[in-house]
Amino acid sequence: MEHSFLDRYSHLGSVIHNLDARTKVLSFLTLMIVTVLTPPQCWPVFLFHLGLIGLTLRLSRIPVRYVLTRSLIIIPFILMVSLFVPFLPVNQPAGGYSLGPGSLLLGRTHLLVFWNVLIKGLIGVLAVIVLSSTTPFPRLLEALKKFKVPSLLTLLLGFIYRYFFVLLDEVLTIKRAVDSRGYRGRTIWQVKTLGRMLGQLFLRSYERGERVYLGMVARGFQGLPKTITPSRMQGADYVFLSAFFSATVISQIIFR
Amino acid sequence: MHIPDGFLSNTINLTTVGLSGLTMVVALKKARQELTEKEIPLVGVTAAFIFAAQMINFPVAGGTSGHFLGAALASILLGPWLSFIIIALVLILQCLGFADGGITALGSNIANMGLIGGMGSYLIFRFFQFLLPTNRRGFLAASAVASWFSIVLASLACALELGLSRTSPFSLVIPSMVGFHALIGIGEALITVAVLSAVLTARSDLIRTWRMEKTASELGQL
Image 1 (cartoon, each protein chain N blue to C red):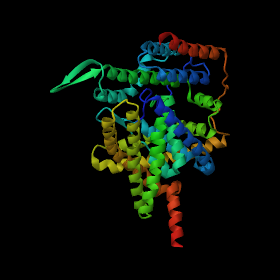
Image 2 (image 1 turned 45 degrees about the vertical axis):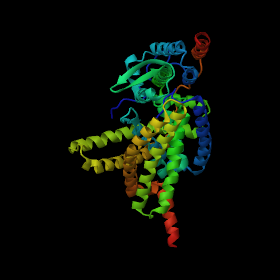
Image 3 (image 1 turned 30 degrees about the vertical axis):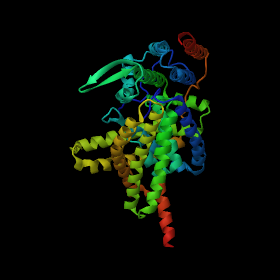
């Protein structure tokens, strides 16, 4: 059946796509940790990190629009924090807005809290999107295995990914069956049917998942998807890794 | 309930990473002992189901968003340890692959949803299973209560962390998070009961806690 894969664009060919998964995991992990540890006042550091992500994005030739749309995922949290910000204790006022009878003062700390959350959340989300859109999932698993992540965890991670598509197929099948019978699912009386559909979805996915698993075992599955070319750290990896590392470190020294 | 990067203080992040890490070590050990090869597809499908269901975020008034958690479903199907591992993996995957939840907040997210939501709801489930009659209806009622608590307790933990990190004041974040999740919890309970009742009808052999209940009641009759 047709559905778009979760790690869309991860099979493009570019300088970034060709890097070893370990390089990318390490680089972006460093970037995210450094970002979170940076005090909110050091805005040039954040700008620099955004630039670094932008450069990687440019090199990887992933559509910028796609990355920006995906990054909207942090909006609910940003909204939540922005709602709470006016209620934090005020010190130095930086501005205000009035709401009918009462007016609220915005302090410097308020804006700082909001900025802190906004920029760190955004950088984290962008880094992860670039990582997942440049690395096919089996490669990511391979990298985790090489980082000595327990095998039960990589095995189950692989299955979540594998079975997600089994589940999606079953959803589409059930949806087609339901559509052809004119079910709308709009009124409260149809909740019971919706519940049955969910239960069926689980059972059908399980039974198909079991067959998938037996098929995999029969074909020699031993815990991780096999890749035709084993991944190796090459010259480009070391260059990228050291460039990324030194860039994040230098940004801390220069811009702080 | 997936907290992004930058919302929590470093102390909170480090504490919850330690807590989740320790639980993970124990859970992996326990899971290796009790997991049979036959159960691998069930664990995989449960995890994929929860992963898929958690992706459907619906906005709640006040700017927060809610979603199906699935921690109670996993712990009733597979026991507390596997449930913790499943939720943790789903969160890791969402964080690494889909930017849902920050990488530095991963410890807190796992502690909230896997430890408190998953293992906590298991304890609540077992308690109500003990109180209620050992039949289908009692079993489903216990799972409804446990799944409601799983989401409310997880949101309480999330609110406490946000408050302790001074990102939002306690007096606002706790009532709003817990209040809205008390409503979301009803949806959570409906979904959990729907799935469990289907499995109970067709393949009751798949539910660990049901097997435990059956052996216990059969022993009582002897």
